[in-house]
Image 1 (cartoon, rainbow, N blue to C red):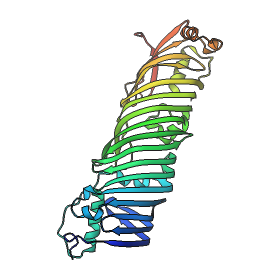
Image 2: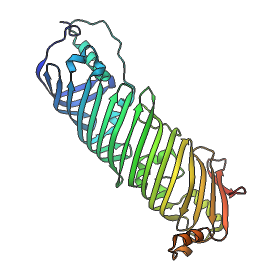
Image 3: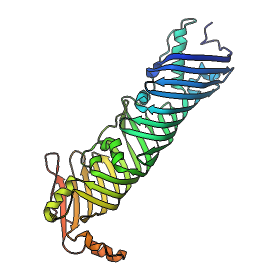
Image 4: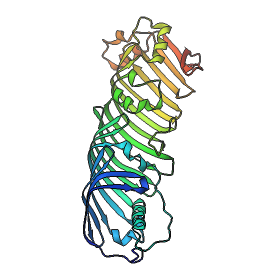
Length: 376
């Protein structure tokens, strides 16, 4: 019979063992697959399932209510509830899901065509709504390593929704939510994240220094906490489009250090030749950065370090357009170490001669520092 026009009544189990399966809509090749399908006339339950994709092994349980009722008429109304777990997951092997869902044109049907039924099943799964509860001991994507990953994710017709994700990383933790709107080769995303006490050196390394090379994992020590609200674009291969991030980062650095940081080393030649700028310790630093594509707005910030104190604000250009003002007192911070009163310390901080400098592009891809004649 033609199964597309005559709805069957299915009841019973189908057990699949040691099978290799190709999920055609995403061209995913699953090997050594085991699963049990239980049909109870209208619902489908998939249990005791194991799939291997590359180096990743996934255990799955799945329930699909009203599966047979909607299969032939309204596949977009099908709701798939997935529970997935894995000891180790290579996230790069799942990048095909970042691409837009594929639509399938209706074709003339050959009676009793197994291939047609299989293709239709793939199209139905692509059209359905999927809720995923994911638990992974260790997830890896390029340099990034996530431990104890738990995620609640929804895959709907227009994109992927990260309802809540918790991750242990670099000695701290990350929580995030957001979405990726899937449209093609380049997709828009929104991410909101809370970062708590991560090792900043490991964090910058894991994210490839966030697409810039002025301050890198090699320049940093300390612990980072932040609230991040960003939007940008990501390719269907999983690469962030560089210099296209927008949003705000409110951060706190503690027990930090800057190692061999070029902009401050250039400041050294003005009046601080006797101080060690190769290893600048920073007990605490709070700041707000506004991301505007290839520019980063630095809100007025007070920086207190082992070699100098200074105030700064302005624009940092990832490609060009750097314009940062710095007010730097010549007074050595070590002279303030015995001051306990906060008001007295505030006055002492900017006491004496103050240098007013500006950091701008040097026209060669670097930064030059000059006197700032139009300071506040």
